[in-house]
Image 1 (cartoon, each protein chain N blue to C red):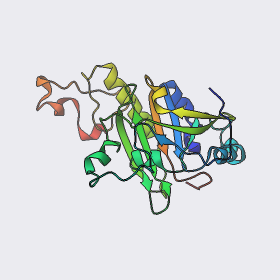
Image 2: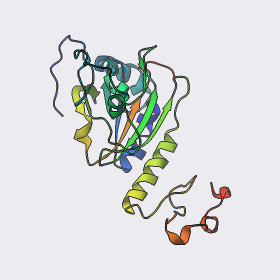
Image 3: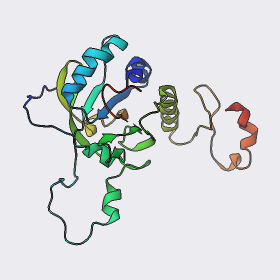
Image 4: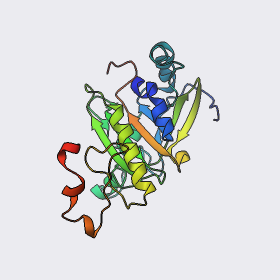
Length: 150
Length: 84
């Protein structure tokens, strides 16, 4: 979560609000921020650190691990309509890669801005060609995209 | 952001519109449909919740639906002071 705090600027530029959730109390969140995270990230954690001690929120999102009583590493992209567009869930020992989340936000924002007229191919990055799904594209994706572009 | 009074009660998040955990057992078996209704899925509405939070030096309460109109990254993790 410190990686998210450190790269918070990139998310803020995209207008993304961050909510982190664990089973720790909000008092423990304060201690973690004050005693550790603020030493990794200038100014401390800039987003809401949510407390879900009974796991109710984690259950609703399918990330509750009932044997350990913890929440798995679940990351959800929620659009301005409150709809989940993407999710990724990892078990505890492997951390996430924030740059990929940022890329997905950029892609979803582009698709939304186009009113669904554009889609982003595999490996798309900002500035790269998008796909315009329609009759002309059927059978012709090879003309605008190939695996080497990923 | 409204500052919340801090008592000693154990606090937790709760899902809005979900039946309370200690609700009496319903007559008949719970259908899987009811369970899936509260399970997150892409392309579906994110389950709304409210929960206590720590935010920039203060204690507050957040509700997911308060962020309507904005893009939200919701991140769960195993625990504070863990290593990854």
